[in-house]
Length: 109
Image (tube, rainbow, N blue to C red; front, side, top):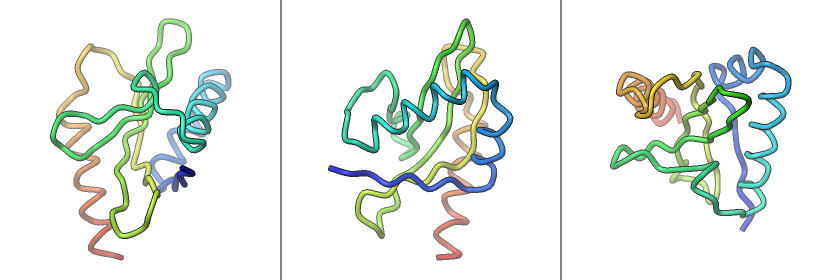
């Protein structure tokens, strides 16, 4: 199963600002998912929100890129935005932000 990942503006900006080695690791992990590698350590659904996160760790830092599946197009994941994770649980405000971006995406589609 081939998956396409589309990056919205905030996701592109986050990736561009990541440290180079962390960015390479994130993009590598995303490429694995695109090739159909199913691994919850690098791509995981967040509770019942319908929001997923691409995950990368580099050094002692954790990086997250939130996303959702575009249900109108087969096998397309839309990356909304990213953040540096500082606690065990993904902050609710980050999930809320991804949900708002998703809602706006569908309104404009």
